[in-house]
Image 1 (cartoon, rainbow, N blue to C red):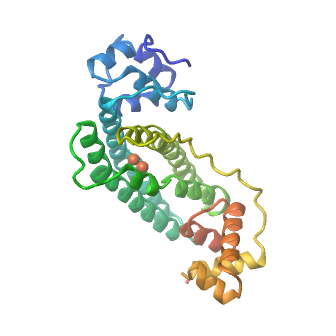
Image 2 (spheres, rainbow, N blue to C red):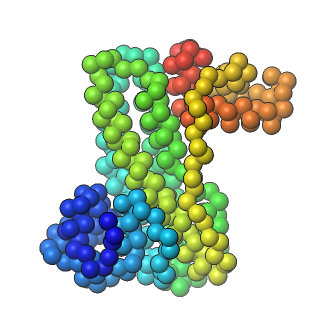
Image 3 (cartoon, protein in one colour):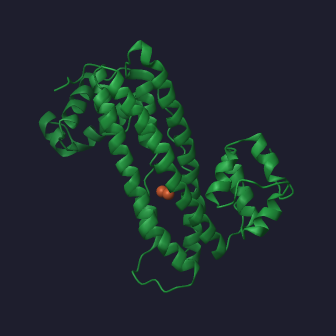
Length: 308
Ligand SMILES: [Fe+2]
Ligand SMILES: [Fe+2]
């Protein structure tokens, strides 16, 4: 779909229901009558180019050119991001927790309690990520958009440097559910429901992070008077074929899961830290799992470690 200012918002939503989230996150009431993008944006003081840009991202279209944005657009983007944080935690994550709790109650398969721990830890991480943005980064951006002095000497470079990809662990969880984690046969509908939620949340978070990394950060860098370094969306490394771990990789994995650092693993196996890091990269490439929490579940399901 080609998004233009003349399109009626109701027609856009009829084509793709997920576009209602864009309205919600921008604070536009759901009843839009016969109004066009231009008309609604005028009523709610939103740059129509920003609306069209975000609508394209919702439709998985990455525009070749990012529109020219101003300080009012920064405020609008921050409002959008804050509203979406609230939605992810209170609706999406809450639904995932409900399903995982049901799975833990209804199935007896080994590793299910680890799934529960994994999800709880992940949600804690996401909360911390959002809290940092809500309490530090966004107030800084709003102050900058309002031309207020930078009291705390904060800089967007600090945010850029520490801005993690919060969808990585979701990809791990999806992989574990699809490839490794056994359920009782009559509980497979729960696995499907959980996967459905994870795919939806992952998709949402990808768009969210894309906006933060490729739109907002470069824009604020510009406002800071720094050279606008063009950023491109991170493209995940092409997944390598899923093949067996070597004995050495299994040794490294066991020690890592026992809590040893890269250096300690290197000392125990009489290899260099650099070699340990290479093994870790291979383990991740072969299993498609990046986090230690995810690798614990993988190792358990593949007999590499045992339940204590
Ligand atoms: Fe965010
Ligand atoms: Fe973020």
